[in-house]
Each structure stands twice: as C-alpha cells, then as structure tokens.
Length: 260
Ligand code: HXC
Image (cartoon, rainbow, N blue to C red; front, side):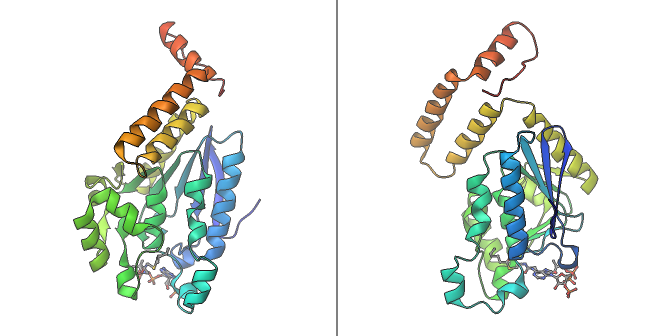
C-alpha cells in the first residue's frame, strides 16, 4: 500500500516505522495525512509481524503543527459537527502496541501534541517543542493542555501555553517530556529502533498489559490504578508466557515466547 504523506516500513525484526513525509509543509498535519497515519497504524496493529512502532519525521521537522491553511477558513459549526481533530486520538485508543515518537526539529502545536500521545518520546538535543497556538489566536486542540500539564506540571505548562514559547530537546528530557535525548537524528533513530526491537522481543501479551496499566495511571486515582494493575497482574498468571518466562529464569535459559 502506498501513501502520499507518510512512509511505512519494517526496518527491524518486529518493528514498524511510520515516517511523516510532507517536507514542503514541514510535515504540517493536514487531515489526509492523519487519515493515512491512522490507516498505517491500524495495519501495524493487525500485523502479526509488527510488535512495536516508531513514529518519526525528518531531521528538520517532526511536524510543524496542524495545517494552518486548512484550519484558517473553518467555521465553528463545521469544526463542531465534524468533530475536527477527534480522529487524531485514534492512535491512543486503537493502538495497543507500543508507539515510540522519535522527534527531531520542529514539534509545534499539533506536532507537539502528536508526540505527547506516544507511549515513549525520544528526541534530539535540537528538537524544538512548543504550543504556539496562542500566537494564532487559538489554543491547543489535540490534548496539549492536558498531556503537557501532566508531563511538566501546571505552572510550566501554563507558561508555555500562555506565551507560546518553544522548549528544546534538552529541556524536554530534563522535564520528563522525553525519556531520552540524542545528539543527532541518526543517533535518535538508532536509539528508537533499538528500544522498539527490545520491546518486540518480549511477550506480546505482557507488553500489551504493561502499556495498558501504565496508561491507566493517567486516568485513574492512585488507589484505583493500583487495584487495576493488581487485577491485570493476576490475570497474567493465566498466560503461557508468564510460565515460560519464569521457567526460563529458573533454568537459566532464554525465554521462547508463545505470545499466549
Ligand atoms: C501549514 C505550514 C505549517 C503549518 C509550516 N508550514 N508550518 N503550513 N501549517 N503548521 C509551511 C510554511 O507555510 C511554508 O510553506 C513551509 O511550511 C516552510 O515553512 P517556513 O515557515 O518557510 O519555514 P521556517 O522559516 O524554517 O520556519 C519554520 C517554523 C514556521 C518556525 C516551524 O514554519 C512556523 O512557525 N510554522 C507554524 C508553527 C505553528 O504555529 N504551529 C501550530 C499550528 S496550530 P510555503 O508554501 O510558504 O513554502 C496547531 C493547532 C493544534 O497546530 C490544535 C489541533 C491539533
């Protein structure tokens, strides 16, 4: 299957990669691009060969935002009745496999929000994050006010969203927005693919459960989250892979997962 605005590949065993590829607009996230991204992620979700996914852009831009030229003429009634931007969240609901965002260059507005939707965020030192919507007379619309606030705390998120000022990859790492920061786009991609390959080497059942319980921490009060985790932990006593993993440890062997 070929796409106009993205590239799709399987660069390592078990690893799918989506590369945003709209260089003329610094990967501005027009609706057709999001439609393609959702289709590619759905395919990876269904693929028996892909177990972890890397989402990236170019060395210059992860994505410079939602497409301002597309949004400029939009009326309230159109945005409201089509639930404009809601489809962006599909990747947070439909994708059960881990998604690593590898961010170089600009990750602004919707680009920053898209990166924040990933399960793990890696970036380069020179990455340029920000929510500049205020400069356009609007506000973040793809979860930025919620996810950035959970990531950096209220005061810093307020400052960023009210001033529209950017923050660097170094800052993203220091503030916990990014899990790791790399000196170049090449090093970033190597790091992201390696992590995806590591994840893809584990039991698919355990990986999906791990992602599910960590994500619950973003929605549930602590007591409910801990209880949910324990229930899922209990349920894994019913998986073959938990028996395989623990037996392999006792026998000092490498686990051969059944993914069941
Ligand atoms: C549409 C965009 C774009 C965008 C860049 N381009 N960002 N087109 N939507 N978000 C286009 C430019 O118009 C230009 O097209 C080409 O990409 C190259 O951009 P330049 O500005 O010439 O590049 P440069 O001088 O290097 O500056 C890079 C930049 C700047 C700092 C990233 O492009 C910029 O400020 N972009 C807008 C960033 C932004 O405000 N993002 C938030 C959008 S609002 P032409 O045809 O002129 O060559 C948003 C809402 C989210 O995301 C809420 C819902 C998701």
